[in-house]
Length: 372
Image (cartoon, rainbow, N blue to C red; front, side):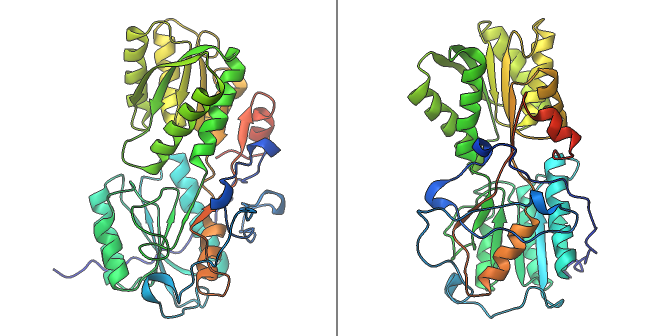
């Protein structure tokens, strides 16, 4: 079968909302795993609100370079206008996170004059494997991949490795070794986000609550870290907070609502909810209302992501707080690729700064356009 011709998309200019750490405490740090330099300004971003990843004091050792990656690569100039960079998006851009993530990649590619090609797997990991393999067959020299899940991209990664094509992963990790199977991971400190969520929920409940956990889709590092971070923080710090139920809502609003309805019936003593993303939190709000209870009063809710509707719910008092997952990866991704082919190299994990939306700052964040 003749491969489908590679679609070259002209990157669209986007007025990207800013990735500002709204409070010092909100700037999560992954300790020795945090790496990379501050990102260069991107088109459409204000200078005061750039994505930042500061080197940790514990970071040591050389970064991954094109000479050391996967047995060695030929050097290319990412910004020469000739190098083809493929971008594999995992989910539909009807999702605000994915829309902002895609726009950030496109805007930075345009700013740098990068030849960018794109595919969207629409939440199908098999399709994502096929699309990545297609981009390789059609001449992509470098790949930026937002994985659908952490375990399912083995075939595509193996082909990229065999063809000596570097793969930079964003927002989720993949199975394998940094600087061998993939260059590095760029994303949030998901474990740290969950610890902040536990602290927020403790503050809203007097550190005594019966909590339902709406966990994310199994099989990816985001769900694992957001679950473990919350449970570890509760266990170590809040002995009077009990997790009475935990069930996956698959990062989906409809599933989140159905699961929350079931949990409220089975555990009428639930008075707090930790949702591992905003979509499930929005579903939980509907389920709580359907049960004749008031979200934010009878049941306290903390969530993670930072989409506009959820931050509006923080202002309205329906959510206690919302920890941002910053999707504006463009500057960090392309800087990391330039570092790969330069002398600086890329550390295994590059942690992006996230905001933290509470009753004290949520309205200001909305007014200033800091929410996606």
